[in-house]
Amino acid sequence: MRIETKPLSDIKSFQEHKLKEQLTYLNTNSPYYKEHFAKHNIEIGAIHTINDLVQIPTTTKDDFSNHNFDFLCVPKNKIIDYSTTSGTTGSPVTVALTENDLQRLAYNEEQSFICADGKPTDVYQLMLTLDRQFMAGMAYYLGIRKLGAGAVRVGPISPQMQWDNIIRFRPNSIVAVPSFILKLIDYAEANGIDVNKSGIEKAICIGEPVRHADLIPNSLAKRIQEKWNLKLFSTYASTEMQTAFTECEQGKGGHHNPELLIVEVLDEDGKQLQAGELGEVTITSLDIEGMPLLRYRTGDICCYYDEPCVCGRNTIRLSPVVGRKNQMIKYKGTTIFPPSICDALSAVSEVKDYVVEITKNDLDADEIQIHIVLSENSDVVMQKIKTALQSKLRVTPLLNFVSSQYLQNMRPVESRKPLMILFR
Image (cartoon, rainbow, N blue to C red; front, side, top):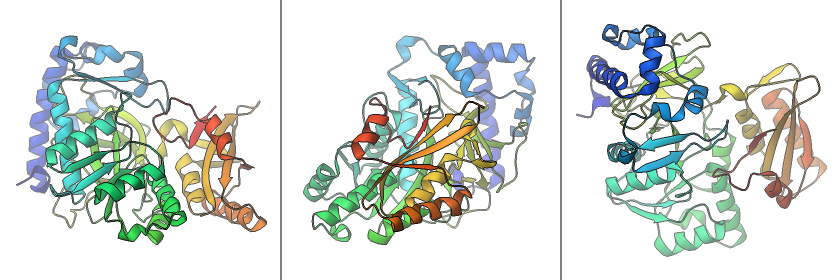
């Protein structure tokens, strides 16, 4: 029986046993956490349960960035892979992995694929970066190998080349950023390709949510599924935690793998929130050798659901990320998380691409300008965009209609992700 299908009492006992092992490991091997425990007078022998974790101050992204290699618990000759964070919310940070960490990563993604109806008979076309120290691409590839399925390593290339490979190799699944799936649909429509006869049955969606926090499909998901009869599986992960939360077929949030992480969802004061309440995802990694983390605040704002899932798993499920803690915007008296802007724009089919640019004015107040590429420029389309933004945000930011080349010039050349939000 898989651990996530066992009774909650068994899962809790398992995690608490792993927690004690992890605390001992950190106290012995981690320069950062040895100092952290000493500074805060933490006696790890007094930490017996998950509830006892509140005795330990949390670790932040700034801590990890400013003391990056103080988190390393093994000699450098034990490191076989150096991954980095994307730097979306700050400077990129290195995450060093041992051989055991890579095996753990492969196991994590194998379980994620299984959760998302994955089978050894599947063939996945990978439409994401596999190099440039990007952990996700490597993780998905390792997971597919461990699952025993097939992989077509195409990478983030043009829709034309994606379709050339789909037609040639006939994969039944794709791993892609959801907004890129819209570009695949546009290309198919323009070139006489019937997406529903392509053999693609499901998409593992990365980098962007396809549901709201209440788990209802968002505008992006609706636009995809209006044209393409795909099963969409939402995922949530980060390089630092080396673990993913992936939906099952029920589409009720990303499932927690309790053998890999302890999860807390905390308010501003570090208090554990109740199911359904939005807070910061905070993780304690289990069985990581290279750079394990303890009570690490991810900066991601989610809520969780704790009722058992119909699929048989009893662990919590995380909602999609509604925003990042350090990216909350105050605009004209309204609190906005950037993903809500993206969701509003995704509802308008004539919006082909965009960048949301966020700056500070002379009074240190947030300003928002949205640079938009349209397939059709008319007063009707303009009004559709304004209505969508007003409905979602209750305010309308400044709009700037531009060319694709203009957006390309705005985006950092070295970015591994299709950046839609730029903080200046």
